[in-house]
Image (cartoon, rainbow, N blue to C red):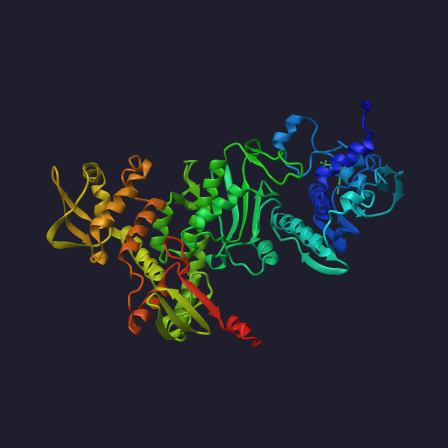
Length: 597
Ligand code: ADP
Ligand code: MG
């Protein structure tokens, strides 16, 4: 039997290092967390060979006293918590007190630090694979510089798992970017192999731990974000969600922050997709940068050694807040046109502007920032209207009008090919018609109910007994949708139908509507008003029934009219069920394909 022995502390540290230190990127993460915790206003990062050779992080924070500097390298030493109860209120990035000791057990670590106080000399200490030297006195400004060299040089088995310099470099950026995004009050510089990659000056009046649009746009230059706001039940949400035109089946731009901490939480990503679902094709994603603040006791950050995941006391509350914020952001930015409409949307979604501060804590509060932007766009649109072909869309980018459409033809009876400006558009005519009809119906429904037309002769509906019963319950709703039904003991006669849906198969459509309405559980409490996602989904069903069917021949004028109406839609990117509408091929894509660069 082998003897049971107590492990050497150095071996214990090396084993612990496996949890915290996986690769250069994990070292960078710990060093940056420490630098942020130090209260620094400037952090400089210098990398050599993807961090395989050297990682240096310099800050101008609080520094470490000479007497403490060797302690910092020992395991379970921290200045951040004292007892386990502190963890539930944790506000710093680090608290386990094992990062520096783990890193120094598998690399050569040099720490130089100064508190900037006369009474405390600045010091330097070197620790090589767990062997700590003596602290010597040096002279330097207040702050700390940590240099990590030759990672895993003492553990060939671990070193083998490191990837190429390029891959490790990419992973370093994956660590750096979220930290730089969420700490916009800190000036960051990032230098790799002697080249300056990022220089991000501190954003004036910004606060670390929340997202600032300036920093976001400096780092994620190519993406236009729609601002997110939510404030209710102790949860606040900030940041932005990418404009629907950025949708893609994959996107690496999905950043989540919980109380200033970069994390990955699939629930938040899912909530963004659900919130965006009416604006983007099914199964596609939009970029997002979402910061959630939540009372510290409602979230556990101590579930993952590298603190990459968190656990919420009430995940549903967080996710539904994210979903609502995304949906409201899109609806307000890509939707409403007039002041009144904007205002009515604020009312409808339970959203109030700061000027009418509600005492009801449960009410969502969103700032009507989008509205202000729209006002100024409205103005520039007016200026441009008579003089130019382009107008500005709600998002501020030049938007094409129907006059940019030079040629159209129908293809296979279901697609429209159009040459628009310098692009070739392939339009799914059914999806386009559905989107146009959907937006028109929503508009009508919100104003005063869908307009209806009386039938010359009432039409008897074939319904089951239970449908007949249910129809009585939802009579008001059906009427707001343009369907008037006279119900007697055993028959239901249709007397009026939605004006724009005259040709639909009413029997079938009504049955589908009943099916959908049955699924709305909280319907009775809602005073039988169709609202929110239920409204959208029921009206999407109607839009689907009325629209141009596949394989229907369109003449030139009809095809043009579809494009014209589509261009006027708030969202011309996807049908109400989330399928894409337009496939745009830019001249450049086409040239590239034929190798005409
Ligand atoms: P933790 O961050 O979990 O406390 P670390 O091993 O990362 O543990 O750091 C140990 C201690 O060293 C910290 O608690 C802090 O007191 C000190 N420290 C490390 N890096 C810095 C820094 N850049 N500036 C000031 N103090 C630091
Ligand atoms: Mg730390």
